Length: 215
Ligand SMILES: C[S@@+](CC[C@H](N)C(=O)[O-])C[C@H]1O[C@@H](n2cnc3c(N)ncnc32)[C@H](O)[C@@H]1O
Image 1 (tube, rainbow, N blue to C red):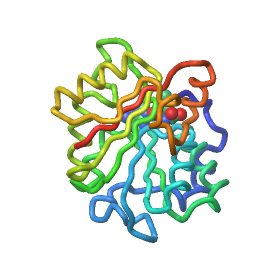
Image 2 (cartoon, rainbow, N blue to C red; image 1 turned 120 degrees about the horizontal axis):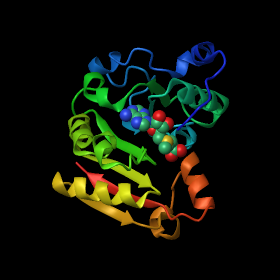
Image 3 (cartoon, rainbow, N blue to C red; image 1 turned 90 degrees about the vertical axis):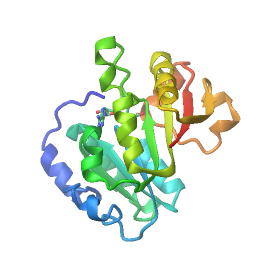
């Protein structure tokens, strides 16, 4: 996701510091440390401007959600959105500015109940396959931080990325359920929280692909 360089970005992020996990290494000892109440821990990777994170935290007061985004100027927009709608949820949403490559350095093994990948960058060139967030290299990281029986919920508009991902899940021997190539016209859409990309692509008529992967 591209974002124009934000004017006063650092100050704007600092103004939302109460929603930010400034030092992700604190999670290693206690992944619930940023939250006032311990709850099932969910993690979104590549949260973009934060619509899904805000909607999911509000719809699920029984969870704590960490939304990770590697581009600070994009995370700034998500933080400001979360600040604007903070009255709609319990204090159960925090943001982490960082790269999913470092997940296992920050989170203890088997600490996450559910992980979300929404409209991850497709990296269509074969030479960039290792950058895809559903590449085996990333799935191995998710396997480390997810609890046994934890799930990955995956949505994309991109057929190439979806097919590649199903292959990677199968190569890892993971069970995949709730596979759909048209989420919005499927019973699986009940309770679906839309992302910015999802709204955009579905308004243009692209079907949304989704799957749940069991670790
Ligand atoms: C195509 S956008 C989708 C944003 C949002 N999930 C949505 O559906 O509207 C992908 C986002 O993932 C972020 N991202 C890509 N690779 C990442 C990584 N390795 N770690 C953290 N964030 C990443 C990008 O910066 C971008 O904001």
